[in-house]
Length: 348
Image (tube, rainbow, N blue to C red; front, side, top):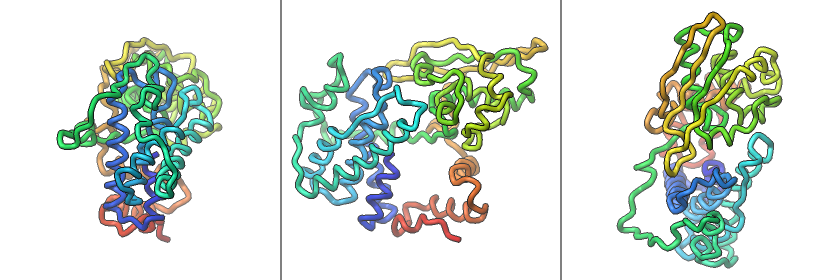
């Protein structure tokens, strides 16, 4: 949700592309710093990090774009801390999208309110009754660890950027890569499948709450749907996230064929060390993917320029001609040289 907040505030502030990128880094660093101070992943406690910590991160980005001083920026983060909220329980519903949208909106508002003079407690993040403590019922948050700017290591450099190749929950992505690989290598047809076994993380599966989705929204949080789309469409894009596709008989028929083995998540993570998929055909053939440690699009396994374009074009949808999509993509790829957010407008 950093991007929509930055584009909104960037347009209002007449910020350049380089300035908006700088604001993105500011938001990223605040978000990552707060994450490192809580050893138990928020998903495990029912919190949606994008809607909770993302609110504070969006406020930091917008504060940077508005040119707030240190005291005003601290106030913006404190205001945002009281505006943050979002639950994993709402995954698979319209409210999941709403809580992320509200995070972006709240970040914009918090920065504006701080500049206008609204007050907030400067220690709202680290206070014993502040945000970090509230998100850590076990009391494990590192609220007292000092932040020394001179010794700072940039999280964005160490952790890199992860791009979601597929428009559904990231917890499915490694398994989708595994399944698509098997489908392509062995030319697997849905009608030939006896069963599909997925090895994934316990916390990942907890987020994927819909075993038999009936809508595109529900399908975003369903490993069964991820496997069905990989087999039926041989891709997982926005075209597959329609109620009509989800309810197709051949898609629904795959759901009961999917079974699971779960593994404990890595320390400090929601994810198992790796995912894998095993597909058995009705003729008795068994096809195994092997462990998939990194999803395609992660910073360890980045998308190619062509794959990035495919993702971009899919997001734009069928309402734009291919040449307009290409021009828009090329403009986006030189974001740091743009004069402002208006340069991103699709040209006819």
